[in-house]
Image (cartoon, rainbow, N blue to C red; front, side):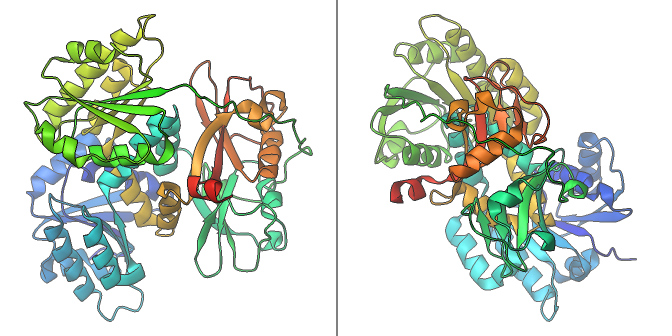
Length: 504
């Protein structure tokens, strides 16, 4: 008997167990569902790997089948026509992904309501061609672009990695869409204060266009859906807050005019994208120094490939152990260190081992009074090494496999989220920021509703905060619960992106 209303995963990679784990959580509210995996990998190997990484499959049945995922007979066995969604994982190059997607297109021919497809694609040119061919039915994800963006974001602001992880996984708070006819004609600012346990951050119109952090005075029309962060869809209901919020006295942000130095240790094809992301948000007062091991790559090739418009980039060769690399970096004052895995030169275990040792060496360096506080951001290739990164002292760490897996799983459940992610990762879109509490008078707030109302007056959507004393990041706090924040704490907001700010 073929499965129905299920998720099909075509292909196999280290990302699949994490994808399945997220789908299991997403499926908990369904009584019976299935995930069917088709890949040119031994069935027993896939099953053993999944059992080793997922403790409980809950209400989800896992079906593994061996076979080339681009052959029509294997797609028929997976019943792609009866699937709710299809995920295509990248297996080393885009050629195999293209074949699988073309096979899906042929299998879905004539289907009036085909399952939507989420595919991991390496090259942006290939992604554009595939979307043109398959239309709105296809959503593409570039792992390198996602990791580069989040690495740069984490480097800019401590705590942002935690926020993105919270929004991307199915455990805890996540993003929901829902219509609220009773709010038609109300302003977006009023809608934000109509939910006690949800943080409203955007809306989708009747044509399916998503707008994050819209003008606060814009009104909700028939067919609009609100986009909110909530713990569960059952909590995404209109529940007016218990007290009228206060508008708090605000103070302009403190402008930091001091020079900034960022050290990047390690390299891969991810490196140029990380520098490009940093270059967008920083100016000529920022210097980025690359510390590269010539035994693992061609340093001259890197030097000629790296370009920047705003920041200054310096390239240094250093064939030495982690402790000497850290000592070399500390010869000049610096603010952040980004550790990238040598994933083009080493396998994932070796690359992550080098990264973890480098983190440990920098942790010892930053304890020196001469160096002072240094933010450490690390890319890990294997998500299982994340607890070791925490022990090594990373403030924010980026796990490439995990982040891509989370995004693929989320998009398989709701393709409209693609517009949300595109907006958040685009220079001209909305930006998630952690800003000084005083910008929203948060140190004088009695409840989080006070902060939301005050941020709204500035055209920002407040949806959480970070406590400086502990580093704790709270997403979607209850609006009426008592709140005490201090001057050195930060408010988590959705604000206009850098292009919108410059245009204004």
